Amino acid sequence: MPLPEPRRSQALLAAWAVLVFALSAVTDLRALAVAGGAALLLFRRGAPRALRRAAIAVLPVAVGLSLASWLWLLLVAGAPPPAGPFLSLTARSAVIAFATFSVLERVRLLRALAPFPTLGRLLVLTLAQIHALRLLATESALGLRSRLPRKPGTLDVVRNAGAVTAALFTLSARNARDIADAMRSRGFR
Amino acid sequence: MHVPDGFLSPQITVPAWGAAAPLWVWAVRRTFGASATEMLPAVGTLTALAFVVQSILIPVPGGTSAHLVGVAVLALVYGPLASFACESLVLLVQAVFFGAGGFTVLGVNALAMGLLGPGAAWLVHRALRRFSERAAAFAGAWVGLQISTLAISLVLGLQNRLSSHYLPVPFPVVATAMMLPSLTVVGVVEGLYTLFTLSLLRKAKLLAAP
Image (cartoon, rainbow over the protein chains, first blue to last red):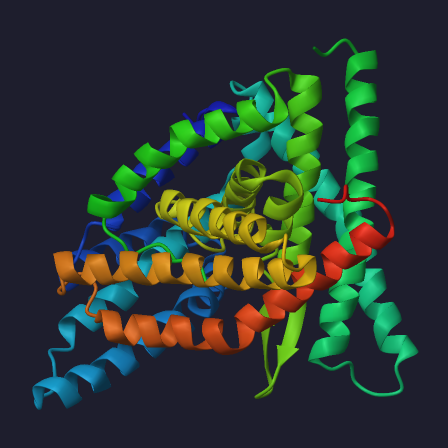
């Protein structure tokens, strides 16, 4: 019988936290292949999307660093280093990323945080503020692009980022005051 | 800049979590107070600010782009403990809502990017601001970024030293891959950004004069 919410999300989150720490200790390629296969089987719904996201998040860093290191070790030692550790590094990162994306898609995070109301409120507040402040940053970037007859260069964007950050500081200070007042008026201490 | 999951073993990530967790509680209480109405709005809005600043992409020569870190500004305006609390929450939000960065490596990333770098930026700024406020802001941000990057490189180097079978990436490769862009381009961009932001905040009289 499936667990009811928020128990299901809490159990999934706890299992995920243990799983990623356990996976981060594995170096054996066969064990990683078995873990990857099991994760694919367990999270087959939405697997292509999670695989794509994991590949984008992991492969450029893992493959880039592996190639650079392989060449470096070849130059230093004069013989090609074994490929196993590089493959296991890439596989480990990819399996963890796949499991993370798959679990996060299935978890109702804010409901799972019900036993920790302060953390839950903090995350809700932060996400709402990210949305509000992001609108300002996006509008500012679009405004910069529309004002300049050419593509904005590095210095243009850095100057604009400085200006938008100053505006964001003002806005976030005002929002913090407003939220604190609203919380006090609703009986929070 | 931050380390993804799978690059560091529990030998390093578990002690880092152990070191960071009490520091998070202390930093939040010390900076924002213990009451919910004081602490939650301030941490939430400043974390959102740090998150949004980090999503601003700067085109750099060579056709690619780099993102701002922006915690140096937070450290210079509100102090290093505030920047540590907010950057840690940014990393947590990125890890659990967007799958970026990592959960196991959260302690390492938070200590390097949220505490050591901004702490160094704050110290350098305090030491140099009597000579020139602008130079101090630039130097603080530049040094802070180098310290964060160096800390991450050293941790990856330590992992390679502990087990080259686990992380077969030697320290010279990590250091070159991370420090070269940081020393040449990203550090300068971060320094200029911090300089512009602090100048504007001062011009608009939103920041107290030192």
